[in-house]
Length: 231
Image: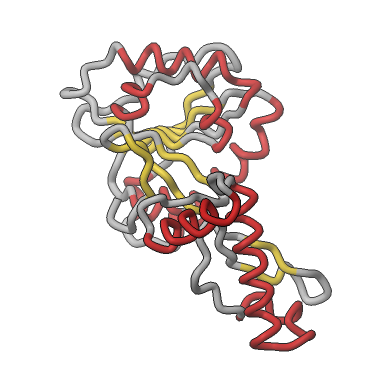
């Protein structure tokens, strides 16, 4: 949905690895992208282009790229498709960035891929969805880190931030709604959280809640930053 709404008129290409473990993510993206298109005006020129690849090779990408429009490559491929992702990197490193503007949306697993070159990630503004992110320039994070170091003589890891956020969220729930707070997950205040946020949505009348919060990160000027609504 984000891609459909924020890349109007651009050349959106879905790279389908055909790897069985990637199939669900490919289908989910296609469904949500097309659903979002139907709700937008003048969607006829935003049709999704699909490139069938394999778990090892990306295929004839050049035939799908546009020189006139920015190319938005969506690659919902995980660890089993590492060879294809490496092949994609090789192909794009050979492309003239002055002729082709390219942005890539990958998967959270890509954060662990050592073979992805920092120059490449910066060149394509690699964008990754994550469930959590710590901004070490945030004053709240700086204050928490200083207090943690003073008390424990070490830096906080992700579990320290997670423990703080979960305790704060559930504590605010108790304060707002008492012991009945599990029935109000979608109304609990989320002020002050640092590592993970909560956007609980009820999945059904007789079912529980699901946290749908996602933060989009992008590589820009050799650093990771969160994506603003203007990107």
